[in-house]
Length: 115
Image 1 (cartoon, rainbow, N blue to C red):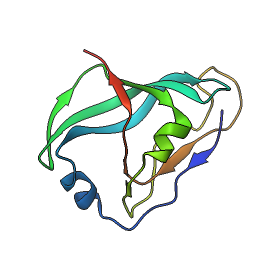
Image 2 (cartoon, rainbow, N blue to C red):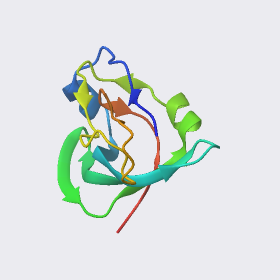
Image 3 (cartoon, one colour):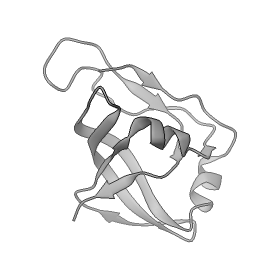
């Protein structure tokens, strides 16, 4: 469990989305886990297709996984706005630990799975 924040960059949200030829816009972390080796897997609350810089249809049942350090190395664009994204502010396992996270929209590569 961490309080994790990413510092905003200099691009607008529109520039970040507009720069994606074929990808996904992922919003909101769901339940998941991470281990001491930096490997993670989390559900995603909302996943939208991006085709030629335009946000398209909503997809269902998406999750992301990968090695946190490798994903962070692949970040090549950050939006200038900052949003609190986890929302609950507490550990999802029912523990009293205060945790939260947030940051800008991030363009990177990550493994996505789902239906």
